[in-house]
Image 1 (tube, helix red, strand yellow):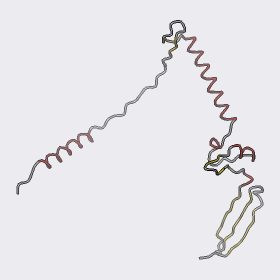
Image 2 (cartoon, helix red, strand yellow):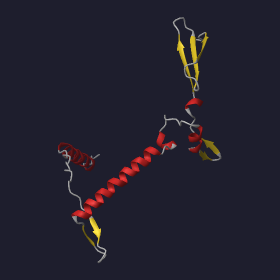
Image 3 (tube, rainbow, N blue to C red):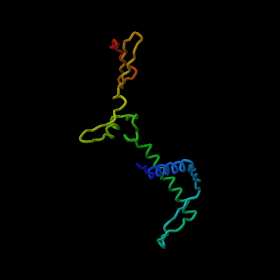
Image 4 (cartoon, rainbow, N blue to C red):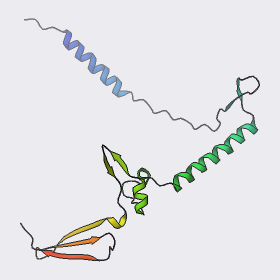
Length: 151
């Protein structure tokens, strides 16, 4: 039976090509930051685009900064459920209910801090468990319950 050389030739070609690609890494291109920008305006007389004058450009920069400041202040002053993040809780019940969302007939909202409670379980040296339950309205008043450990 005669061996065909075509598969061996293809495999060797792929190996040579792969080693050639691996041997010549492409250097990352460094893009220098541009200090100037292109600003264009529509000429009110001709209706065509033209380069902005220095006065028009500086007026546009001032207006842009004012809009950015106004947007930042609006974001700070307005707290929504999505902007508060997963750990921030509303302060008042009104704020909590104002951010309520209804999906498929079920209304959900974030609870306020005084609605929350926490449980901490600690294993003692003798094997018993100490359960500390604190209510959100008075975090300093913890209820301690000792239970025997089940193994």
